Image (tube, rainbow, N blue to C red; front, side, top):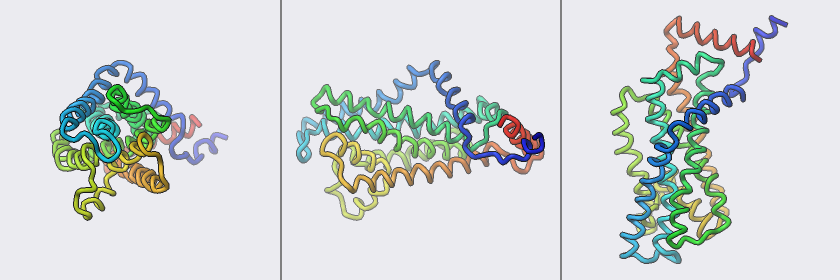
Amino acid sequence: MATAARTARIGRLERPAITGVLVREVVNFSSYWRAATFSSTVEPTIYLLAFGFGFGSLVSRIGDFTYVQFVGTGTVATAVLFSSAFAAMFGTFVKYQFQRTYDAILAAPVDTEELVTAESLWIAARAGVYGCVPMIVAIFFGLDPTWGMLTVPFIGWLTGLGWANFGIMVAGYAKAIENFNYIVSAVLTPLFLLAGTFFPLTQLPEWFQALAQLNPLYQCVELVRAAVLYGFEWNDLLRVGMLVVFALLMWRMAIYAMERKLIDRASPSSASSFGVRTISRSWSS
C-alpha cells in the first residue's frame, strides 16, 4: 500500500488544491473588497455617465437605441477589462515579487497549474459581478430591464477569464512593475477604445471591421448588446467560441509564464522542493 501511494499518478487540476487557493482568495478579499470594488466599478461608471450624457447630447440615437442604452451595454466590457486584466497583472506581480505569497502556496500540495487556474477563476468571478454595475446604473437612466440581462454575468465571467489569464501571463514575463505601462498603453487601451463601446464600428473601413472580430472585448460588447437589446442570434455562438478559445490560449500561456517565474529548473534546491510537493500530494491522496 505504501509503495502504491508513492507511485500513484497525480491527477492534474485536483479539486482540493484549487479549492484551497480559492478559499484563501475569498478570505483575503474580505479585507480589501471595498477598495477593489471601488476601483473596478467607479471608473467604468464615470465613462458611462460622461459619454452617455456628454455625447448623448450630440448623438441622441444609434440605430434603434438611445445613446445611453448603447453605451450602458458597451461599458460592461470596460468594467470586465478593468476588474480582470488590471487586477491580474498588478495582483500577480505583487504576490510573487514582493509578498512571496506564491512561494508559500507552492510549498503546500499545490502546483503552478492549479495556482494559475484558481487565481484566474477567482478574478473572472469578480469580473462577472463587477461587469454588471454599469448596466445597472444605465437602468436608472433609461435602459429597459430584460430577462437577457441574467446572462450578462456569465458573459462577463467568460471574458474576464481570458483577460485574467492574460494579466497573469504578462505579470509572469514582466521584470518590473513599470513594464505594465507598455501593455496598458500599446495593447489594452487601443482594444478598449476600438471595441465598439462608445461608437459603432460599421462606419470604419472594412479591413478594420475584420480586425475587430479578433478583439475579445468586441465579442463581449456584441454578446452583451444581444442579451440586453436585440436578442441572441446563431452567430453569437461563434462569439462565445472565440472567447472560449481566447481563455484557453491565455490559460496555457499564463501557466507557462508562471512556471518560468516560480520554478527554477536549473536549481537543484528548486527541483528538490518541487519533488517534495509531489510526494506530499501522493501521500495526501
